[in-house]
Amino acid sequence: MITVKIGPEPIEPLALPPIAGAGACAEFTGIVRADENESPIGGLRYEAYQPMAETVMRNLLTEISAEHGLLAAHVRHRIGDIRVGEAAIHLALWSRHRGPAFNALVAFMNRLKQDVPIWKTDTLPPHS
Image (cartoon, rainbow, N blue to C red; front, top):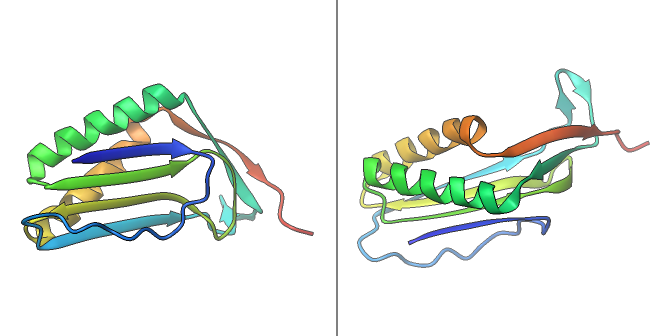
């Protein structure tokens, strides 16, 4: 089972469903930090060609799932203005053991920036 969602809605904590056979669930949440290139910011703006980005993410997760033996994957990515301290992405990957889940998480995050048409287009000014 692979689910992908891209949209402007805030990423709230998610109650993770039990996945049959899973002994591990590796999660990653990417949070906007208060600086970009060592300069203070108030947030980031992300844009995407949403249908294509969702398709590329789903295909990438399918490929990585096969390589690492994942049982399920769930990813949410925000677009629009995301303030410092808010989540820009959340990824959860289930596998029988922790090693494959961790390795798949690193592989996905590395490929995300390279392959998926989501762009960090601007920084938002810091709060006054």
